Image (cartoon, rainbow, N blue to C red; front, side, top):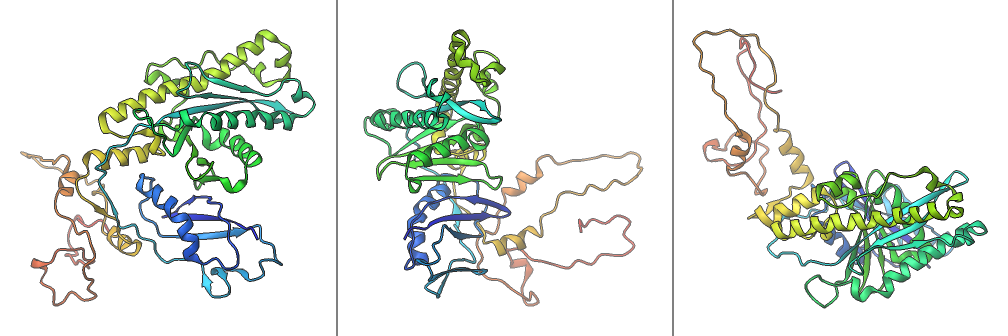
Amino acid sequence: MDEEIIEISYTGSSEYNFHLNITIDSTTTFNHYFNEVGETFNYKLEHGYGYDSIEYFKVKVWNLDLVKNSKIKIHNKGIDLLGHRTFSTTSVNYAQINPITKPDSLVNFATMDLETMDFNGNQKAITISSKSIMGRGSKLFIVDTELIKTDLNLAISQMWKQYFDYLIRNKDVLFRFNSKSEPSNTLTIFVHNLGSFDGYFLYKGLIIEFNPTMVNAIIDDSKRFITISLKLDEDYTIVWKDSLRIFPVSLDKLCNTFKIKGKLSNYDIRFNNIDLFNNPRLFHSFKDFAAQDSLALYEALRMAKNIYFRNFRVDITTIFSTSTLSLKIFRRKFLKTNIPILPNEIDSFVRLGYYGGATDYYKAYETNLKYYDVNSLYPFAMKNPMPLNLIKSHKNMDNINLNNFFGIIEVDIEYPLNMERSLLPF
């Protein structure tokens, strides 16, 4: 009795799909399910993924067999196992953002890039280039140029198999800390534009070659891949990440930033036609072009990795995007105390009192005037004490001495009707 389930967590108006493929049956309880996914869930939080607050999460079930799973019922309130347990929560509150005191350990990483070709109006992957610590150049995997003419799908499948076999065969070298001999449990492979192009081909290649329960993904609210992972066994996991989320510029601009040799040439439109395989000189140029992208990306990211580790002791293989990199640097280098994350209902109340400065324009005239302005008043105010934890709430403040009160209050303010200019933002 195999059913695949997806766990989806919500942060404000954003939806993040963890896509954890977990096998359940009619006896599975919510606690049992969460025990399976909780470690991954907490890992994403601990490594600084961009959550402001977790409002709730929900579980979706699909691929149901109506006969075997007749006791699993889906209704508008969630999932009811054995008729008495609903899968929903009102609040999952991860209470605070903590300083990171332990520096990262440098771990090996690799890069990957795809080149595609048009077949009857559809783009198909025909090369995979891979660069890692192994060797000076990149490794190029390419479809069988004869088989592709008779069995396109088989040719592509064999190419993906060669790539995956290469990673598995060399895992003892690839899964390793830079400065230590013992292996890491995760190999990160960066792909520039995993989210909206390369990820689709990679994900399809993985679920064809491996049991789908071994393949997981994180997808954002725009249906773009954040990560795709392959759990080889209990000790080894390969995670593909989108380097474009960390450095949102073209590969050429990224290479220029770090003074690394980028693309060999502009893309030749003839690379997109099967006649490429009948032109030896053009085919040779194409293979050089395809191999260079993963090599250039690797060298640029290697430079970036050294800079961030040297300055902040942060390894970019541990983060997901520019925002998570910034948050981790802040937590590692500058944060000295815990920052509580307010429950949603309290956070919503507090935000009612936040307004920008007055932007009204008044036509006024004065002579012999001295005008003063204060720079950086907002960060100055942030240095003052702020309420952090909910100790007590009051529905009536009549008997509260405001001179001794430290907290946040919702108030009604009355001011003279003959005031020429209002000082209130609302």
